[in-house]
Image 1 (spheres, rainbow, N blue to C red):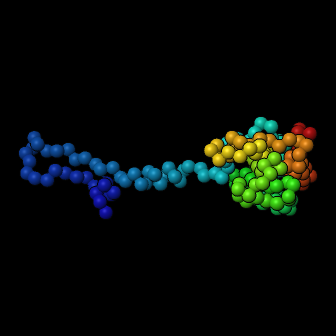
Image 2 (cartoon, rainbow, N blue to C red):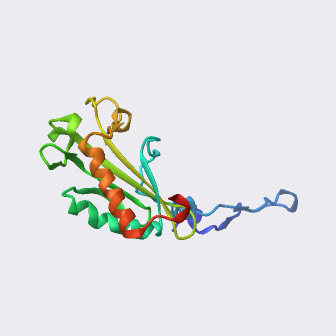
Image 3 (tube, one colour):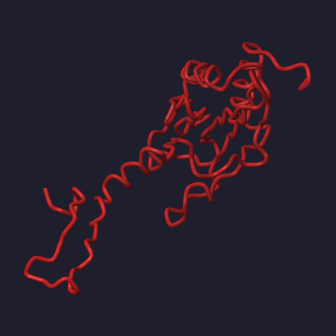
Amino acid sequence: MRNAECGVRNRKVGVTTRDDLPLPFRIPHSAFRILLLVAACTPVTTRPDFRPDPGALVVTLDARPERITAALDSLVPAESLEIAHANVRDGYVETAWYDTQAHRTRRHERDITNLAATVKIRFWADPWVPGQTRLTTEPVYRPRYDPSRPERSLEAIVSKELEGYKIAQRFVDKLKERFGVPKAAQ
């Protein structure tokens, strides 16, 4: 172990006179402990670094976010969609790309053959008031493919007439039926 890691005081070695005594200096502890503390205090989230689109479906439900996220974990596979990302603690669920015409999940972007019919649905379950959740459901598609741009900048909300939006609406309706809607939100 080096002196720098254990905070040992160093002094000048040699014969000195009383006027020439150096002041002891303290070597600071390793920065590793500070970095460990910062890493432990930094929240880790699986949510994306962007907010939902303002045109997304928003509903208030009578349940805590953890219950709604857990329910989505079972509802999404029941509709033949695959979950790409889910975290109950964060209140976030994201499906893989789903081709609404072929009724197949597309695991990779290179597998998408029909951009207009392929959707991804994201769910944000945020605490609203005690015991209630504000669920934001965002069905998106990509009108074009451009690998030079970030995925989010190419996404658009699915039109209400298309199947992708109807799937998202069915999820919201099932959650409303299961958990109920607060009287103030009706």
